[in-house]
Figure 1 (cartoon, one colour):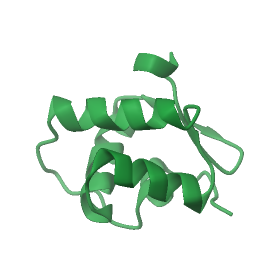
Figure 2 (tube, rainbow, N blue to C red):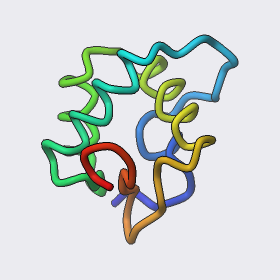
Figure 3 (tube, one colour):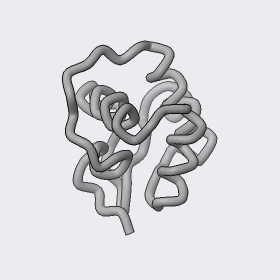
Figure 4 (cartoon, rainbow, N blue to C red):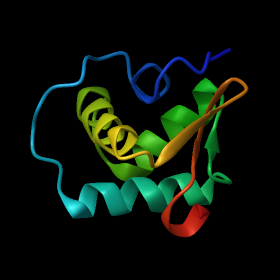
Length: 88
């Protein structure tokens, strides 16, 4: 079970690194989150979203972390929920 510590812990077990995140990457993550009902609260959903976005775990952590810093996610029991874009 995934605990709602941070988006980073849910999306990937990698530290946030200051790197440029493209708008396309954020859009792909928003779209992928919407296709799973806006909430990622299982390992299966995390992997499914990551595969749909088309990035590795390290990059997913960077993209998701950047979006988390912009308050695009909220913690929910066992995971995270996107609250912007198609899930607003």
